[in-house]
Each structure stands twice: as C-alpha cells, then as structure tokens.
Length: 167
Image 1: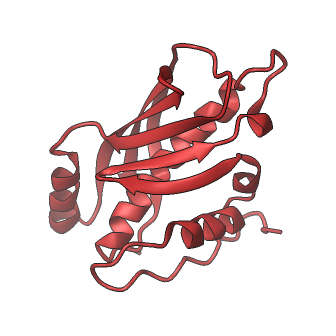
Image 2 (image 1 turned 90 degrees about the vertical axis):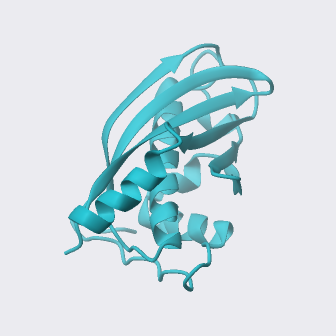
C-alpha cells in the first residue's frame, strides 16, 4: 500500500525512440495510483495520435444502473494525464504532469461497456508543447477526451495538462 506524502518511484524510461508497453505501464499505474485497479480498464492502446481505453461499466455503476459521473470524470482526467505522460516518456522526458484545468459535458447515459479516446485539442498542440519544453523547460497542452458507448458519444471532456520543470 502506498504511503501518504511519499512519491511513488518512477517507471524506467523506454529505450530512445521506443514507446512504453501498454500493459506494463498500466501495471505501474495501478501501483502508483491505487484506485486504477478498480476503474475497469480492460485495454489501453494508441490509435495514431489518440490514446484509447476500453472499460467495463460494472465497476463504475451509479444508483440508477448507468455510469457514475464521478468515476467517468476521474477516468477522463486520468487518461489525459496518461496521454501526456506517455507522450513525454516516448521523447525521453521523465517529468511530473498535473491537470491544471478540466471540464466535462455529459451528453447521454453510459449504459454498457465503453471506450474513452484522448487526443490533442489542436493539431499544433504537441509541437507547441515540444517547443515550450525546449525553450522553457516546462509547458502545457490542451487535450480532449470523448467517451463512447457503442456509437453514442456520452461524455466530452477537455483538460489542460501542465508539464512541470525538471527538478
């Protein structure tokens, strides 16, 4: 069990030019953030520049038998953190990432297993973040997360993720 106030050890960076193996990253994430093992994440994968989670509804049910908004919000926020962290790690950065701002719009009830897709809010976002990291040693990126239950968009979230300076 994690100790309050004690940072979890960082996962070793992948070899230069390589990506993290998704299952190994998820295993580390479940150790670093204990609630992760209860989120119902079945799979994590990249689809182009988008990071995708496949999730089970059952551990995220509310009293009405649909998706619990608090759990769904936590998942979208955490997926944005994962996108940013994995993007950095692929480029050789071991940095702390924090969510600076987040918002959600609930569009339809989540009634079955679902997927969340996370991507940069703008096409220039990753290049802009890379430039800021080079020039200032820190930066931010806007991300959008969409939760789909089948072909129905149930939730859209936006997050601003800050990459802290090394040190």
